[in-house]
Length: 492
Image 1 (spheres, rainbow, N blue to C red):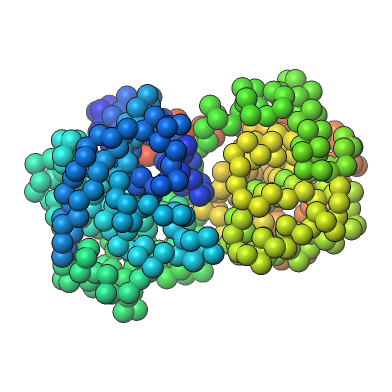
Image 2 (tube, one colour):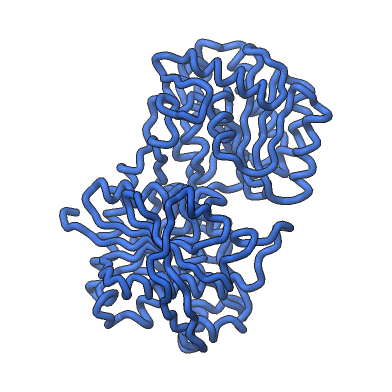
């Protein structure tokens, strides 16, 4: 696409300011890649109280902005991050965003007013575009939290002098989270009850943010080709398969990229030693330091399996819990595990190092530096997901020469090439059944390759590090999606 586009990226997270998962990484990296291709992009996120305004050079931009909701007007402020390649704006509204947690409290319970919080944010983000006269060609929303944006554009802004020409794109990062709430919230949205129908927002008598967003968006995509195909089927779409199939060619899968400025062992300042596919000595140092930091037995000959994950059923961490002790008891292996989520899983994984001292290390929570250490110091990286729209850690792992062990679903299937024991080709180990036995034997297969076919392991490491999943490539695919959205918008 030769025309320079103006793109407003609206999301509930953006790295490095606020992150709970891969959504933040996408919103942090895709705008930069689009800008490198010559397009004008702004990013708009909520100003959560957890965001470090000093560290990130965030300053007041607009002291007051009025946002008309369905039954009231809300007054908020706007801040802006300075010294950034892409302008990033933050909607400040303490009533909704000045609290511990992003989507839920410390007990992992969702905030009851989440539908109001993100309806307001979606409306406020569009109001900001109007107030700064950002006449976007594309308004790009992400996940259920901003799925009202396409509806607001169609219902409220169709003839707006600033936003009237904007086409909408909605990216689904995880269809398992749809924003389903009671109808008592709908008046506040201001979308009109004529738009509360079985084709749009109505879902078994309640509201479904994502369902309505799919209907109103000019283009819908998800974050890998395989996941796009999976979510066209009832088994994987959590009730939304008919509505995605109705989009026909206006639903597509675009594989996420990774930010090689942040995830690259050749330039990574967070890890103990840098290394490359041609010079691997630094990875041995990283492994030794990782073992030391997590109180594992320091032994270069014992393979380390890394895990960085939400502790949730979707990620398969409950299934891993059923077999990890059998793995450690029967194989020469160490585990390093980072994550948080379900409290019973936090408790289970937190207690493992006491029972398997020197063989399992655990950190409850998320720490960016530790995540880099795990990617750099591990030999293998385990992702036993029930489903995985794209996944980023397996791509980080490939770059760091840490061979993925993954369930063949979604983006994991798209990015990891199965090991061929006859030829030694491949970049990782894939299994299909979401069972403890499948995890056990797949980890065993990887460990046996490490010990018994070391020349295959070494070859796979180097091949993995040569794989390239750049945001520049993904951005080109998004531009094709934008072109489709604009074309569809112009026919209406």
